[in-house]
Length: 363
Image (cartoon, rainbow, N blue to C red; front, side, top):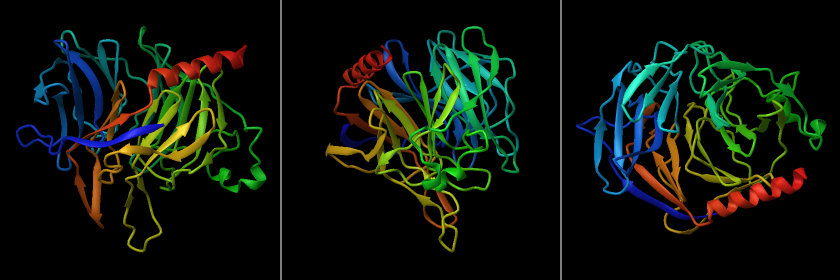
């Protein structure tokens, strides 16, 4: 997987002195035929926001989008995504309270509607969309750092929640005696440990999940696959240049590859407990089960180190927005830039190869 280097599309993205939000939702939507990048809700360092901030990808103009109806309260670390012509929002946190609520925004009427209450309150869960269902995993469920490893799915047509009964299976190629670290990541049923601030990506019918922070505030770098048809978890033995343990990186699938950027290390060994922020980029090859550092053929190869940032894609363009960073212990700053990264490979061809090979293997 090859990339053209980072391009700073916007250096300081703001509306009337309102800075963009960390841990907000990021989507591509069309309004009047124009492609817009929308960032909504989130934490801006000094306040929570529920604004919809638009950036026109053609004209580079910014604006605020007005919505009506049952507007969700301000929050961050929520789940947000676009499905068909609607934007869905679930869960989140507002500094003192955790949410179990869900909402849907109709992009035709720009009107919000509240959904039935679903699973327990949480924030910093991960999700994928598969076969008209939203699947969520894990998250932090209360202020005492309790986390979960449950899986739920939401029927996007009938709007019904259902908890998934998961099965655990040890990868036959994984020698547990020689892989002692695996014990840090699994329980007696060989399910992933409870965690939050992890990532998930969808390739085929597999949800790949990894990284995050456990109930002891320890950063993780294990990697798992969850079959969305059989509901079986498998810990993966991966190869190559494996990313170091980290919390809240950004992650997106690119054909049969998974790209991650940044993140932070919780409770590092440094005496002052200073968080380590990453600016590195990695790709995971589905077929080889191999991690490698992203390869660039032009332009800048890094951006400001960050965590809790937002990522989305439009064709072969990947957009990374905002996030939290720091250069001194105890001093955090919220970034307000918009970065674009372009994939050189043809994503559609890459996905065609994945589907073709997957079909041949099944036959």
